[in-house]
Image 1: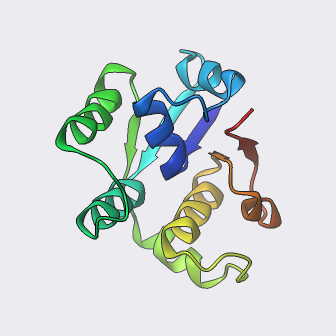
Image 2: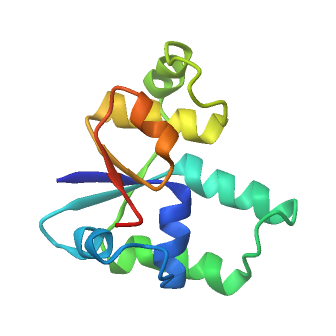
Image 3: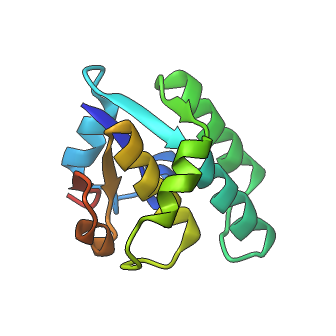
Length: 131
């Protein structure tokens, strides 16, 4: 399965949070699955940390980067096709980072792992990250 993990799921994974469901943790850890992390998520983390809306220190930032390498996560850059696809999304969700993740999941045929129930309103496959 090709998984795109939402920003909060990435943070839960890096922090080894109990908010990340056991089943989801197993899916992400499974070598049978490809796990993608969007540049939009790293961008969102950076902005929220700089605004002090997210408590993330340099150690956690390094852990997130290390997770990409150690666990074989793949970086998903933002492409023009993703940016254009955002235009056609209905406004079930107004967060620009989430809208980019939704567009990327649609364009790339990825299953989005999130605990945000608003994502279910879009034409994408989702997995509840809290399960």
